[in-house]
Length: 113
Length: 115
Image: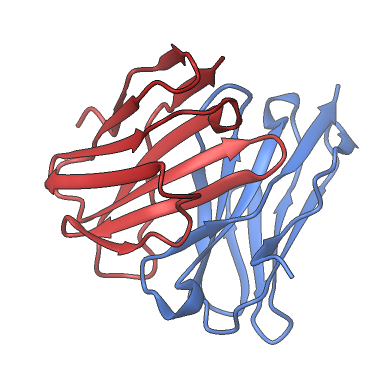
């Protein structure tokens, strides 16, 4: 089992729709969870992080965490063509190492105008 | 702050040559990470340092890879000898230590091509 798993996609949604991106992780001891966005040819940049069970909202983005199910998701409301990118899920504290930050392989999102 | 600075941005080298990638983390950040990104394997953690000390190098592929952090403002990743399968984008990232909610900031990456 991979440490952090994501569906590679592509996930295609029409403009204005809700995009739902999912991530599972294998280590129950993981402490915090990050969503990064990476445009083609660019470096990853942080969208938001979450460390408590439940939902966390930031503008059009909502992160959801369920530690019992070892599941974290990112919802993007009112998707825009500029949201088209690869979305990387990252897990911190993997294996008990406080600062160890492990990434999934990413989900490619394509928002159709 | 200028952010995480990596050099060179692009490197093309012949198989068997030594390659050195460089990274300057954000001032005040105590953690430094080296990642390798390929289409097949995604973003893999190679090694990370806390306060200039290597904490976990379990992701380093083999003995051809080595990393150093001689001081808080500089790190290198060396590949000797290089092989075509080392071709990838190598990212350096840094973050403050002391909290599980601290994000990692990435440099622009070094695109390595070994021919």
